[in-house]
Image (tube, rainbow, N blue to C red; front, side):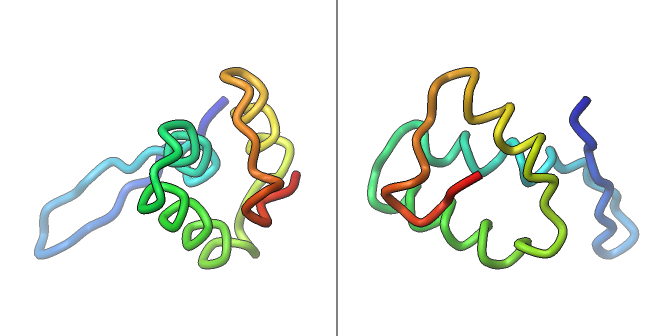
Length: 72
């Protein structure tokens, strides 16, 4: 099950979808900017990612990350 996260900024709380879901979501449209964003998220959160969950999210719409260095 996805793990939403809560971020606080100036006493305002935001619920953020899991990074493992955001990466395939950015890869799916396939624009240059979306791909750059996905790669950036992968690099930035590399230590925290649940690779099994990322793989699962990428399989559903059949998103391919390998051409961009995002392998799971």
